[in-house]
Length: 302
Image 1: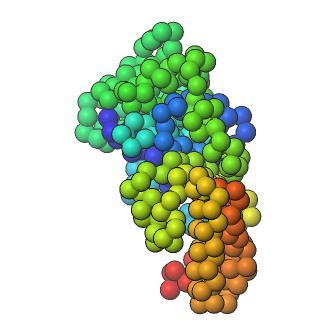
Image 2: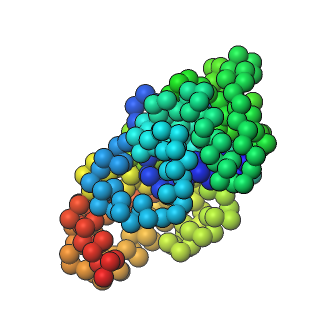
């Protein structure tokens, strides 16, 4: 049933949603402590943003986007109006996706969505709602869906299904209250998109593209605010102040060396860039107005 996971992820990443207020505050607490990264998204606030409207036409042409949307729309659900999607996963491909939206957790709707995904995958359509330890569930070959309440559906791989069930019952400790607590405190979980993650050594090596010193990165956290154009805030953790300062200094040096090559029309974006060491972290921020985004799109379309 891998299509369940890819479809959930496609909805999240292509629509660019994130945590906002109460809906995601509950959803994020269903991500087990074993998660190595967590992403929060809010379809409703994203699709209402000017940035989304500017790029929506191109996005909605993508086959993955259309396929992901159809799995929900054919069940009379509107994924672009969901309140929140929270995803947690690890390198072993264990996964939970919690979707919060009107009617998503009702028996007929949840069953319909899963059958649509099974059909797309060429699998037998089987999505019977049953009871397990007092909770409504739909069991499939490599995982389980929990109908948490009428407006919340949690999809989990087999290895995590019991852990998610315990979190629904208020037992155990979610990632954001234990292993990811400090990281979660560094992001704006009310932004359009947010994420927190541990950085495995093999990926840390790729950071050399930014600066050789950046290969020491241990964690990352960030958010995207689309309320006025686009604003990105990013925090990279290095575990030591000297490593953070060395990295920040090198990245600043490299940026200073190339910023003069940026077209004059993007001068405001260049001026908005902030790079600084803060304790054992390196903080990066940049913002672009809608005029900047429009100019960038026009340039890309040429």
